[in-house]
Image (cartoon, rainbow, N blue to C red; front, top):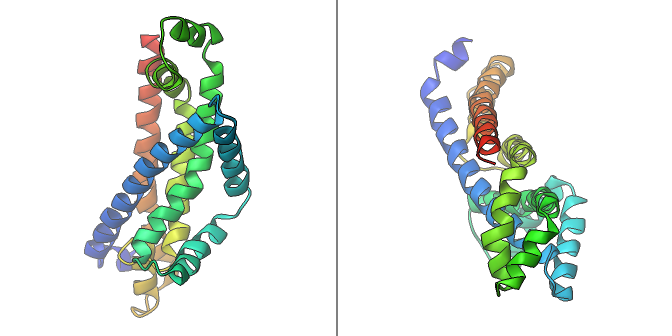
Length: 216
C-alpha cells in the first residue's frame, strides 16, 4: 500500500473534489427530480406528458450515452464549459429521473383525503403539493431516495473516467499512467475514498428514517 500512503495528499485532494462534485449533483438531482415528479402528478395534461416522457427517455438510456451527449454533443451547439460542469449536469439529468419515480411513489402513498381536504380549504395544486403532500412524500421515501443517491455516488466514478480533473478517478489515472505505479493498491485507495462517502451516508439516512418514523 506504499503508493497510497506516499500520495495521501493527492488522495485527499481527489476525495474533496469528488465530494464537492457529488454534493452539487445530489442537490441538483433532488431539485430537478422534485419538479419532474410535480409534473407527473400535475392536473395539466401537457405537464404530465412531459414528466412521463422525461422519465421514460432518461431512465432507459445508459449513463455513458448521457455523458457523451453532454461532453461532445452540447459543445457543438456553441455551449462550451469544463468537463467538471458537464459531468455534474449529466449526473443531475440522469439521477433526476430515478429521484422522480421514488418521490412519485411517496406522493401516491399519501391519502387522497388529504389532497381533497387541502382543496376544500382553498389551496391551489401548487400549495397543496408543497405544503401538504410533498413533506409527507419525502418522509416516506427516504430509503429509496437514499439508494438512488448512493447509486449516484458510485456513478460519479463513471463520470470521472470521462476526464473530470482532480477527482479520485483522476488521481488513479495520474498515478497509474504518468506516475507508473501499480494499479491494484491505487484502486484500493480509490475504493476506500468512495466507501468513506457512501457508508456514513447510508448510516445518516437510516438514522433520519428512524427519527421521522417516530415523529409520525
